[in-house]
Amino acid sequence: MFAAASSVFAQQNVVSNVWVADQGDGTYINPILHADYSDPDVVRVGEDFYMTASSFNAVPGLPILHSKDLVNWSLVNYALERQVPLDHFAKPQHGNGVWAPAIRYHEGEFYIYWGDPDFGIYMVKAKDPLGQWEEPVLVEAGKGLIDPCPLWDEDGKAYLSHAFAGSRAGIKSVLVVKPMNWEGTKTTGAGKLVFDGHDAHPTVEGTKFYKRNGYYYIFAPAGGVSKGWQLILRSKSPYGPYEEYISLAQGDTPINGPHQGAWIATESGEDWFVHFQDVEAYGRITHLQPMSWKNDWPTMGEDPDGDGTGQPVLKYKKPSVTANQAISTPADSDEFDGGDIGLQWQWQANPGATWAFANPAKSKLRLFTAQLPEDAKNLWEVPNLLLQKFPAEEFTTTTSLEFYLNPKLQNEQVGLIVMGMSYAYLSLESTDDGISLNYVTCIDAENGNPEVKKELAKLDTNSIQLRVKVEKGGVCTFSYSNDGKNFKEIEEIFTAVPGKWIGAKVGLFAIRNTKTNDSGFADVDWFRFNK
Image: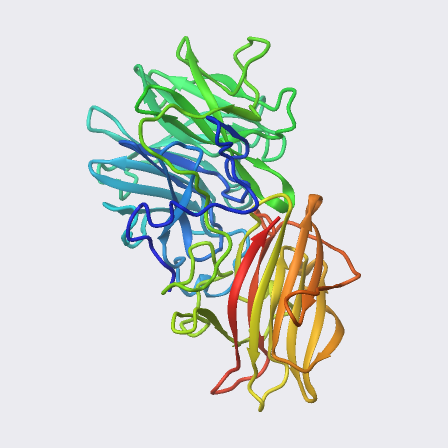
């Protein structure tokens, strides 16, 4: 259903209208991705860089992004077509699913490991990151096993580091290293506790395992998502004892909680660190820091006081690479004129086969209305929301659609939504006397609160453009137009809020509350982002 890129260059020429990090003069600004690519990890293979990130309950999961310079990124594939177990993730599992993956390249294959806090540590692999990834393998079953990272050593031994989610495991702020088989498919022992962060580094997690100059390194964020720092551990043995060092902290910058990500060495010998910053409704956005080594300890960002702990840069010279890389960004706008639904879109759960279809003959996306789950109190519990990440701090999203209702039904709805733990949307709804245009809000949706609906107008057409303008702080103003030129604003203002461990999202939906053998549908002409 979703398009996997047939070539790594398939989406290289996409440039967002709302956020571009490459300044075109040999410099870049942070964030390199103003979108919720949480817990990023990156691997280099030759002149190519591949990134993945947490995807939690969104489907498809484990995004694959590609770059040749660490600044310009394209979304080119997903490693996880469906969440497993399939039945469990057939309904929204907010905040669950894929936590903090690690991507590695080993003996000609790409491996991604992640922790599902309810089921254990999984692995998927592929020879071609742009092709079909193999089915997930459960490397170790268990509750609260999170943030894994493999290390294949020169002596033929393999290891897996990971942390614990206190909500499931009953312990937290400790890290372990376990032996693993060379194939990377299962741990082979209980392992050893290698670090306890309770005293100085609470909530230590997010392990990334490396080896350099005879030292084993565990890069691990500590101090919490919004206020933490990047901890570095090193030892001459994979099982410790480990020395500790702080390589990156907020310092005198506005970049809170800079931590958790990937160390990458370029072909030219430069070192860089990709990490996230939590910015609430905008999610965990992605930054790039220069990195240097001194006495076998890394410092990330700039170090104005020379104490070895860096602080984030806001603007910097781009990495030195020989490969040609055009300015590019992950896609956000979608004209729906291809043979597949764009990779920027994700569902709230494993999708049904009838929810959505690319319709290339019409250059449109067709969304069929799907019946609401019987126990759904609001859209928080509805799987068929087709959503994408906020791509910038300020932007305007406009979509053009036509609503083809089933005249035998009432209460079919299609619309434009800003989704989080609270949400708001504009919708067209079929009623006994025609089509109503509604503005709907739901505050504290995750706790089952009901929607509040306000009818704005009766429509004498099934064609409409819906718009939401997002300003600093996630302040959202909805509007609509019958002619595509004159937009009428909704007086009420909605402030976007995060979802569960994710930022707010914007997107489309088509729902009904009755059973039928022939549902209505929306034909969506396009979905565009502009400043």
